[in-house]
Structures are given as C-alpha cells and as structure tokens.
Length: 164
Image (tube, rainbow, N blue to C red):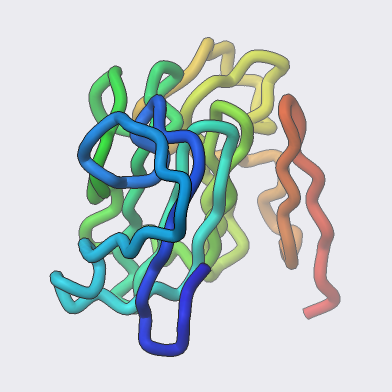
C-alpha cells in the first residue's frame, strides 16, 4: 500500500526478503518500509511477484527485492532482503514494470519489452534459447507494434496492443 505521502507499508511472508525488511522474518502487521522515503525516492509503481517485488521510482530507477533464485530481481543469485537498484539511469526508458512468478518484465516508453529471470516456456517472447538471464533481454517479437499493457501470469505473458 502506498499513501499519498509516499509511505510504503508491507506485511506478510518475508522468507525470501520479499518485504524489503532486511531481516528474513514474517511481518504480521502493517510495517512501514522506510528505504524509499529515507532516500528521497518517489514511488510511481509497484509490482508484486510470487516472492519478489519491483518498484519504479519517479527518477525512473527500478528497484527489486525478494527471491532471486531465478534472477527475477536481476543481479547476482540469492535473495535481496532490502531494495536493490537494478536500473540505475533508465537508459532503456522504462515506464512500466511487471513481476511474474519467477521472472520480471519491463516496458519501455517506445513499447519495447525487456525480460529477465526464469525463461522456461519461452516467457521472454523470443526464440533465444536461454534458461534465464540476470540481465534484461530484449524481445523482438513485438517490434513495430504499439504495446499498450502487459499482463503476467505464472508461466505466461499476455500483451494488449494500443491504437496509437
């Protein structure tokens, strides 16, 4: 939950650090996650996967935390128990984020799709034969089409095209 004051509150299972609460312990009441407010970061969007989260900030940096066993948080394998900056300067011009079960998808301003994490069942939408990737992989299958919205499931992605 994000309040108008940019205060982020979390609660629930934290086995993999998916609450961003440094310690790997479950939280049973709403608990304020101070990282973003303490670092003067305005949250634009949050996407929750099965055991990881993505956050897009107003400076267009992207943070992840939680389970990273399939590289769904990007970076090194393991778990991130506090927010980890995965896109620092946003030269990809990412405007939307989507956390799947064990993979992540980014949508750029130009309608380009980037994916990382588990790629079983070819979730990246590309014929590249990768088991997964810790770095965003460009999907060229939708090149030239105007992607409006992306929806992610456990092992799939659905894309809604826009008219403009």
